[in-house]
Every structure is written in C-alpha cells, then in structure tokens.
Amino acid sequence: MKLAPIARVALVLTLLGPMAALPACAPGSAPFNPVVQSNTATLKADTLALLDRSGDFYAEHAAEVDALSARIDAAAAVASSTPQNALAARQWDVLRDPNRALLGGTIKLWKAQNTLGLSFREEKKIQIRRAFDYILCLEANKQRAQSCGDVQGVGA
Amino acid sequence: MSQFDDFIAAAKANLSVLGKDSFEGYSAEVKAMAQSALDKAQANLKRWTAQLAVSQLTEAEFRNLVQGETDLTEIAGYTAAGMSLAEAQRLRDAVTLSVIDTALDTFLKPAPPP
Image (tube, rainbow over all chains, first blue to last red):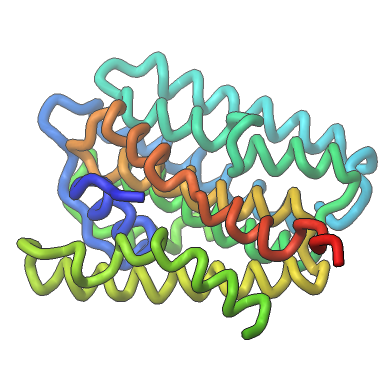
C-alpha cells in the first residue's frame, strides 16, 4: 500500500493527535460561532458519558441514544446549512454515519451486540474524544490560529 | 514465532509506508512526527490484536476500532484545512487497512487441515 505524500502527512497529524499544531482557517471559511463551539463541547461530554454506559444492554439506553443522536443530527444540520462550512459539515457526517466506525457505527454495533465490551469502550472513547477535539479545533481556528492542544480540554 | 509476530511480519508492508524511508524530501520535524506516528500505530495495533486474540475484543469491535482510526484520519484531514474533500476521502481509502484483513486472517482463519 502506497500513500500519497499529502495522505501521509494527514495520517501523521491524526496519529499524533491533539499535539499537532494546525494552521488557521483557510480564507473564506465561515466565521467562528461560539454557540456552535459550546454546543459541540457539551455533545462531546454527553457522548463520552453515554459510552460509559454502553456496557449495559442497548435497550436500557435506547431513548438516551435516540435523544443524543437527534442532537448530533441537529448540530450536523447547522454545520451543513452554514455557508462556507463544508469541512465542518463533512466532519459531522463522518462522526455520525452508521456505516463508519465513529459515533454512528459504534451505536450501530452496540445495538447489534446488545452490549459493548470494556476494552472496546475504553479504546473507542479515545477515538471519539479525538474526533470531537478535531471538530472543536476546526471551529476554534476560525477565530484565531491555535493548536489542537488549545481545545483539547474544552468540554472534556 | 508467535501469532502476533506473524501478524506484525504480515502487516509490515502496510506500516512501513509511514517509515523514515518514505519521507525523503520532508523536513526533520515531519520525519520525527512520522516516526512518532509509526510508533503510535504499532502500539495501537499491537494492543488491539492482543485483545482480539484473547477475546477481550470481538471481531466486530476490532474491525470498528481499526476502521475508526481511518475515519479519524479523515476528520483530522478536514481540520488540517486546505485538504480538499476528495483528498481527504482518498486518504481514508488509502489507509482502509489491509491490516484488518491481515489481522483477521492471522487470528481468526480456520486451521489448515492436517
């Protein structure tokens, strides 16, 4: 398998996680929205809290899952309806897609298996925390250039 | 050779694309980042495959974790601004890991007939 140079660099950024310093937003991007930032931080905290309970039977938490999913969908809708915000919109789509392997795919797996194992829960929480951190970082960089490390703790 | 060693040997080609040799022309900083990334990827895969081997992870959970790493790569790509949607999607496809199949083949395939 051969990765294109840009792919290698992006993979490096991902694997290094929030330590990687990122550039300011590209010219022409949507303006910083503090409400979006705050809501995303809240969704991050609530998502991680729900994953803590995914060792229980899915049916016991189906209503909570549905409620959280609706809030995630609403956040995605705001992102997609904001002009010049395609990158953020795409991030939300990847996060919530049930055919991917972040939040949407994890909920799908929880439903299919009835419960999620302890090891999986701990590892998946790390991935989903990082996914939210990247979403928060992109939003924060609309305001001023800063590294992902600056937003890592937001809502954690 | 242990099952895990077999897996690492089989997956070496996949992981080596992140190695130093693939970063000719990049700055020392990027090369250092690449080495750190390689170490992190190997650590994650080693931990997950070990957990798979002792049934601490189901096969579906293992697949989800590895695929989640590639999805995370795409999200990071969008944050790293300037990467086009097509490029980010190509990145995801590029790292859609044959490592998954390698690991599943190593740990889950039926034993050959005697």
